Image (cartoon, rainbow, N blue to C red; front, side):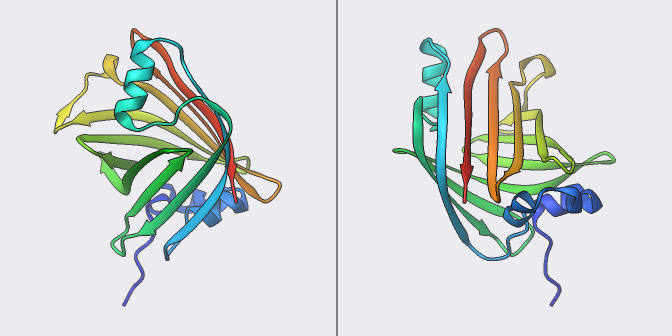
Amino acid sequence: MTEVMPPFQRVLGRSFDELPEPVRRLHSLTVRTAVAGLADIKVAPGLIPSLVCWLAGLPKSGIGVPVSVAFTPDGRGGEHWVRRFGERRYASSFSAVRRGDENLLGERFGPFSLEFRLQASRTGLSWLLVDVTCVGIRAPRWAVPKVGCLERGEGGRFAFDIKAALPFVGPLIHYIGWLA
């Protein structure tokens, strides 16, 4: 039986091999794996950012917040992630998505489907949100949140830096941290 390639490898193709070793290791899992680390989290001030983060289960502000992530490959080329930042927990599923001639990373959680463009380099992996649908309705380009993520190796650990902003509202959340 042929092993199905994990979604990040499917999306990135040959450029996957350029990634720093900690990033490659975490995105080439074939068995359930749990990792832990710490993060510094800043939720933007204001009612809207707080409400959006609460509704989505995103982390609360804090310094040195314990983080754990359980990665579970589904055996069909997808993965399910369960993240815990302090007391907040959220889960989503990832798969490779083909849009025209482009390979994108799809993420599903609740009624939302997100599509990310991935860029691999020797220094790390960048994610850029390019599309959002909610209950099957595609958001117009001007309404797509600005979400960017950079993953890199940091002394043998997996490090992340994630920022999100909402159109017409501004910054939502910024979190940086590491997993080992």
